[in-house]
Length: 306
Image 1 (cartoon, rainbow, N blue to C red):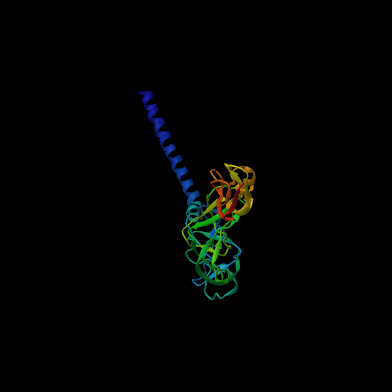
Image 2: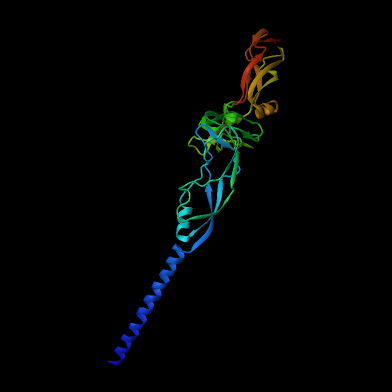
């Protein structure tokens, strides 16, 4: 029985001690989290939409830096509270404005002490604000591959709603995009492009970027080319007058550059079956499929079979 009594005695000693230690730790944690103040810096965003018809232009900062003291339990909730500082618009007029930073009720909860505020004063300009729908103008950078050109340019959406200072937006009808690079392109492409906005202008349309579609095709040109007339299947000696035909041909630049030496272009008159005499004949003209004949001169040739 003595060993069992000893065990019970040890339990009577250890259990209260452990319980006391646990309560002491809990009390210390509560004291640390809810009583002892801690100091920290928090950023409070500034809402610069000072009034319905006015706006702040070129504000010096976008956040206030507050140094606060409070129990640690309040600190995390304060940082996650989403508070925002709004300058008091009373008395705001168009032009330069300088106001002291004054934290109103409700911005900082009870139990939180503000040790310092930076900056303590805000200086900015106030200007009339407008909203305006404007056409999107796609800006391109670079050049397509040699022999190719941009034939069409589309953007979606075509218009966006913007808000900003009247002096910036009132006389504009288009808003440019950031440049879309088409360097070396030889086929149509589609790219997302951000709007190139002034810092004071905001995009109200619910789009992240516009989509630019650039049609790129082989560059076309028109050339005048002189081609000799060939007599095919001649029965005897013959003369053709004039001896050349002047063609006006439209097609890809690369094709036209290579055309004289490509062997794909020819002009001839079929003399088969003709007897001695003088005839008026039209020429047959052969061109590559990618080239188009726009004009030919002369249209009729004099053929003399001797």
